[in-house]
Image: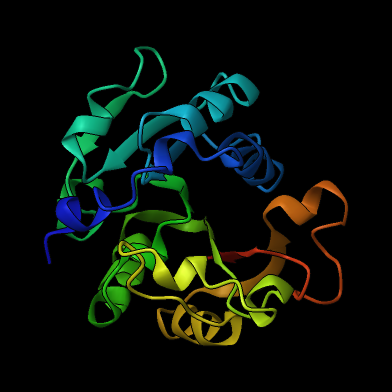
Amino acid sequence: MNYEKTNLLQTWSEADPFTVERYTQFAKHIDKKSLCILDVGCNTGRGGAMLKSLMPAAKIYGLDVVEERVGKVPENIYEKIIYKSLMDLEHEYDGLFDNVVAGEVVEHIAPDEIKKFLDTIYRILSPGGTILLTTPNPDSILVKLGRTDVYNDPSHLSIMKSSVLEEKIAQAKFKNIKILGSGKATRYLPEKFPFLLPFGSYLIKANK
């Protein structure tokens, strides 16, 4: 799968208006003692810049498959920028990261590579490390009312119900799995709202 080619089909990702808020949500779930974070799908670094501002002592690595986008990342955000697919990450990174964040990334992974994607995250996390990922919610009220943007996006290859992704994460041996609301609805509702229906995306948090 040529993920650089498929991701270039999504022309608006660099200007996603919710990116900064998404990473602010991630930061709330990251132990401030964490020293090393991998930002999967770092794009042009807007989310990483927010993490760095909130956690200036953290060492943050950025990873993305689109060379054009990582070339636009400002200096002094990431310790290192990795231009490749997560699934191709070398074993030298095994156990390195206290946290792996992936904002609106897993839906860009082909269905037959979701297991490899999650297994790789498990491999590179330190013992007890945390995965934090968001993805579009196919059970949101907007989708049920007929909004099909997430399905029509040509770069979206795997739109999963929260129960489906939760099961896949459990199969990858992660523990303490929590599902929370994400997206613009968090401006008005708590992320722990008892139903995912109002949320355009959901967040899954789990530990190695």
